[in-house]
Image (cartoon, rainbow, N blue to C red; front, side, top):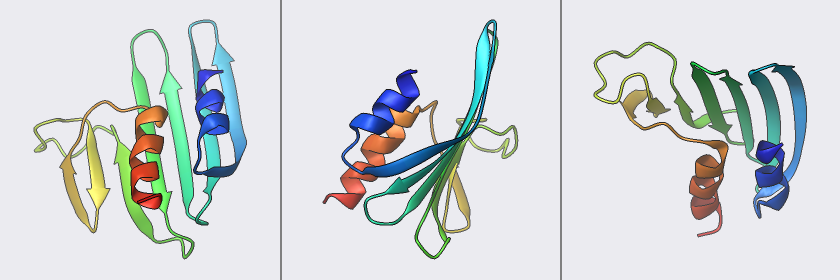
Length: 113
C-alpha cells in the first residue's frame, strides 16, 4: 500500500501502527497511529471510494496537545476552501486537498529545521 511506503521511507517516522484497515472493491478505510522521532504523534484516517475522499491528520505533541489538524469534514462553510481546512490554536484556516505525503513533508520541515 502506497501509504505505508511513505511512512516506512520517512525520516521522521519512528514507528506506526495500523489501527483499522478495511478494503472494498473500489476503495478503502485506514486509520493509523504514528509516533514521530521527536515523540510527537500523528493520527491519520482516510476513507476513499470512487466518488469521495474523507481525511483527517491530527498532529499532537507528547503532552497530547494539538499542534495542527487538517481535515475535510463538511463544517466551517465560511472557509473559502471548504470543505478543506486546518485547525491551529483554536482557529480554523483555509487548506487544500492534501495527502499523507504532504503532511509528512510539512511536519518534517518543522521537526528537522
